[in-house]
Length: 615
Image 1 (cartoon, rainbow, N blue to C red):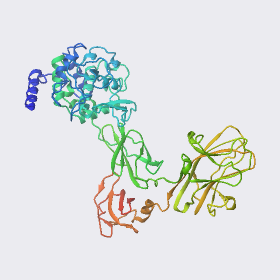
Image 2: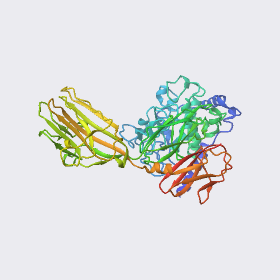
Image 3: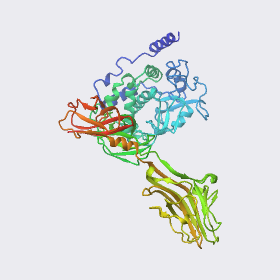
Image 4: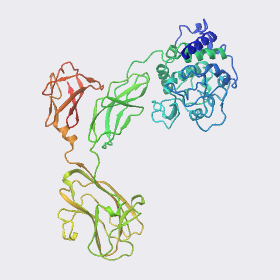
């Protein structure tokens, strides 16, 4: 029953409003480029019967009523409509018009898709229903005067998914508003209408990041790219056709880009660019951690304009950026990844992938020691004294960022001290590699130094002075100068990997006068597990001969590893079908062209990547 009513209603619209009048566009036939736009400007200006701004709410009864989604006769608002489910809220015509609002769903008002501040709210633009549409008042306010654009990381999202945030389209990095996909083409064609209908005025309008100040192209390069994309991605709908007919009845002119969507390209893109950008080069990796790394590259060139770069990880597109750098995050420790970058221009042409870059994340951070002294009863250090009772003691502040710490001695406590902070257990440095030491220290008064030492023969029970202690390599703790002003220092990631065997680590404080108040906090030693599994896989998988020159077989070896699968990729990230024998010998390579390829070898211990060159 509902479907029948809908069909009857659409038939009623067709009879009531009619279609494009015969001969309406005759003067535009055979034209292209800006000549076509000028001809269309004359056609849609003649007959434009300017209505009042207040009458827009009456117009919306026929131009913007929902007969297409819920089909409930409510106001069709592109900023709140949910095309695939129930709307978050609805408005009845002439009810809940703004008015005050504090959130979505409070009221609806009239949104100028080209902000009216740009043309000083002048007539006839201010009441042109072709681009002044009903929208929720709160969302309208959030959109403000921002341009439309593409947002990846929104700072705010409406109930129907429209987004506010930084633009990701190459050429503009400011804040933009992105409507949902359902209405992107609608909005693009409304803006193309503005550029045409007001061709003789628009060059003098106020500055806008959407406009280039001309009367021909009208839009800035980056914004034109957005509109062309949206117009192509979201074709003309029945809703737009019906709205165009209703507007024609209301104010006497039409939107030509709904009647003839092909005229968008005929005017703004008459000679489509088919030349892809140059391939990105100079890929470089920095800031490699266990879960992230950053890749930078040199900018590509294009005969028209670069629109951005597609970023691929293991042949999967994971991001499109308008910068020449990208930070990969959320990765797996000790894993090799394959990265390539493609350049994209404003016409949608995409280059082949850059020369592949393989990056291996570091091993996960192993905290051999991590002591913050937040729990004084469960420290990994023992407090040992050999002289006075001026021992190390716990404090609740004055540590790193004024956190708990341990401290010794103080102003005028001028007594002999031989005090130690010694790890409760030995540290097995042979179980780790690449050991790094970090600590927060603070000192005031006196000139007594603090030493960081280690011992292989200390037994954990006797007086420390009876054993051999050696200074920890590369750790240089400043000697106090006697100043009463506290001095804070942070030592970070000091290489202490030359220590071997099982040793105790200790802070040693010996004073016979001029005592110093030392504070110790955030003692950290990190290291990689000895014999990294990733390095094991990389070392034990090999390919040969490499480069290949006239050969048809590539041999793969995996000493002590079981090969599960082997895959071959070209520089575009496309997988190339291959077969290999039971001995894991690749075959059928004779049809490959010269160039660089990537071999992915999956073993029972993990994945290894090898670069293959065919000459």
